[in-house]
Amino acid sequence: MEETKFERIGSHSHITGLGLEGRKAKFVGDGLVGQIEAREAAGIVVDMVKKGRFAGRAILLAGPPGTGKTAIAVGIAKELGRDVPFVSISGSEIYSAEMKKTEFLMQALRKAIGVRIHEMRKIYEGEVTTLDIQTVPHPYNPYQQVPKSATLGLKTKDEEKQFKVDETFAQYLIQQNVEVGDVIQIDADSGRIVKLGKTKEALRKESMDLHVKDTVELPEGSIVKEKEFVYVLSLHDLDAATSRRGSFFSLFFGGKEEITNETRQEVDEMVKKWVDEGRAEIIPGVLFIDEVHMLDIEAFAFLNRAMESDLAPIIILASNRGMARIRGTDINSPHGVPLDFIDRLLIITTKPYNREEIRKILEIRLKEEKVQMEEDALEYLTEIGVKASLRYAVQLIAPASNITSYHKREKITKEDIEEAEKLFVDVKKSMKYLKEYEEMMLG
Image (cartoon, rainbow, N blue to C red; front, side, top):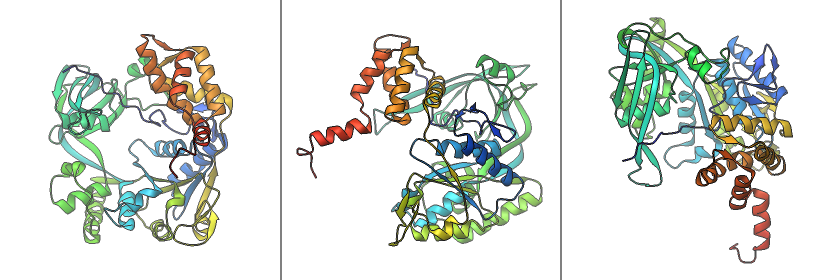
């Protein structure tokens, strides 16, 4: 079996904060571009949260599709701290047939509240020097690759070793987005991984801003040691573990059963005890709910009560709708949100990106996806982003890169993008196609 590198690139994996200097937003900062007013407003929200002045409120990010609403929500979570949980759901997800709407929302809320736990454990600690994840075809879907094993190299100032790890541990590495240059701790018993940050040497190699990222010193001594191990579980993780009465770590591969109020009360009491003993700290995180107009009146009533709770995360809603019917009623309201709920929201608006901003975002995505592009190709792709949409332009990078590889070129050319554009059409071209062949389409 050929060994292949498992790439892990998310839509917002490059975002490390809001890109602020004081209260002012830089044109480009922490992976964000433009949206100056929205980012400065988000910075004030972060300040309010840190000062404990945000209780009973939530945020609504309102703007057209593809204007960075999710990116700003991620930036808020990153500004609040490295271990702050960020949970993203879509409004339509609450209608899952597997559980009640309120149970789904309750689980999402508790996933967004972290508990930082301190324990003395036997750990492996060091800087990641090599990371090769070997993959095999998924047993049920041969077109999808899943991790089979991994080779992990760690070093300290005094020692360097390589480890061969199994598929479960390889999955942990992917979930934590571990990269070469990260300093990590691994719990010897459970395999749980904690990223501490990157060394300055690693940041210099990657040409990254030393002030933006968390920088840590290269650990001393042996790789295996007894040390305080600090890790974060969510309240939902603890709920699930307590309801199963099994190992904490079986919960990551468990089902989606409903959890009783008695179990949650038991967990809350246990966490309060840990906090009082100095063994744990509570970290309120961010619950991001996209497509907020898909929530119904019952869900809004539940969220209204949840915002008053002592253990409530920061709730950020996003909408790309204007006036819309509140689901479950005959009433039209801004963004499909009840007026009494809107009164409790701080509304931040996002605006369409201009040409310069679109080009800069594309440059960032190219760097994140480790892809090189000719100057005239980038100019042409920017033009596509202006005329069609930024999302469509970003989507074209991957197929264009594939075409480039096929032709054995190192950089994406304008011709590669034109070919990808012909093969994968944007919404406007798709609508034109539908009109042209509407008589042949099924109604």
